[in-house]
Amino acid sequence: MLRASLAALTALAACASPGSNLAPTDTDRIAAEPAPSGAAADAVANEVARSLDLRIDGRNEDALEVLDAALELAPEHADAHFQRGLTLAALGRGDEAMVAYARAAALDPGLAGEAAYNQGVCHLEMGRMEEAADAFGRAIGEDDEFARAHTNRASALVSLGRFEDGAADARRAIALGDDGALPHMMLGVAMLNTGEPELAVASFETCIEREPERASHRFNAGLAYEDLDRYVEAGRAYGAALSLAPDHAGARSGRARIRKALAQEVAEGPTYAPEVTKLYRSALDRADEGDMEGALADLDRARVLDPTRAEVLFERGVVLAGMQRYEDALEAYDEVEAVDPERANLSYNRGVVYAGLERFDEAIAQYDRAIEEDPDFAFPHGMRAQALLALGRSGEATTSAREGVRLAPNAPYPRLLLGRALEAEGELREALTAYRGALELAPNDGYLQQSVTRVEDAIGR
Image (cartoon, rainbow, N blue to C red):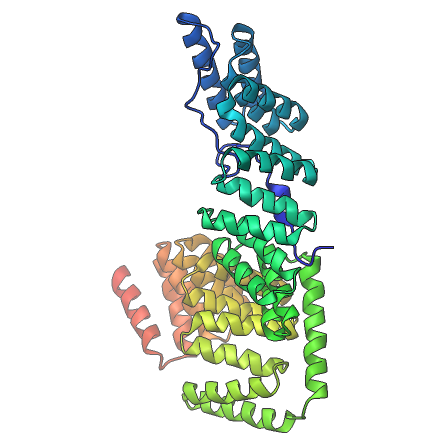
């Protein structure tokens, strides 16, 4: 059983559907010999071109009808057969598609490489890995610099457990300029299964750079880090995978293993609990005094002594966020999730960090999660309103802010946000009421005083 996710293989069989980078075709080549001449030749060329437009629009059945009609006029038109193969593949009729590709290659040997490649893609879609590897090999035989043929043969070979051969093809594809995630993923899987986890980590981190929203890359990185006994990084990777795909069973199991391994590691080592507690309390005091650098230094030392103390990791995220080191804060919160996924306020704090990065859609998603976890927690409603305002969604912001005021009627901040949302909607009198209510709760707040004065001037009193 492969030690890394191969979910990408099921996505390979796009068979040159619009936008695919898997099956390059020469759609400008229309006529092939023997072919009709004169007006008949023009008619066939036009029909083949029209079929391509239909396929790009997703009208594959209509495209197939057009191609069948064209082939009645010109039964030996190679490109019509080739385009018919692409269309059949897009309809999920892989075996028929491969016959069409073979016919195209027989009529026009110049199509042999592309035909073999697309046959390989169809074999992959049907799970025929041996046949896929053979077909991609034929494509490579026609053109050894066909990068994506090397990439997809690597996929088939890795699925067959032929890791060294798969790694060779993946490296060849990368050298030829295939800059997608897939060749790096196949190289990583091969390295992980041949005892080279350091190289696997490098490959999976490249995959993450290429496709940051793909949970399987984070999961695979977790496996590689776990193989290296780098448990904190593994836990962070599994946590990131679960953030992208909450139902990812492998990532959930991996995170559970990491928590157990970290706990065991600490239990078998020296007991640093008193020193960790002392450093943690010192960090809190320093942070209260505004000494964020000193607080971070204490928390870093505590984290080295015990990487499983969730409160240390959590406070470290808070301090990093306070220093506006937002990316580092997100990593710190990933570490918290690896050891204590149910930690209170984790989603809320992530939302605050995303807002600091001006990634407001992600911030709103985290605030929504925090509200789901604790519907009576007022702050996520208020911060959600602020993020919505940043996106120009003042109506939704008003609704969120009103809920924040309802849940925390004696807190000034939700009323301030309600005032801002109402002001953005042009509801100045209601905004003034909200600002005045906030000012009553915080009479020395200069910003609130300015807000009241501004709106009073705007409405003339």
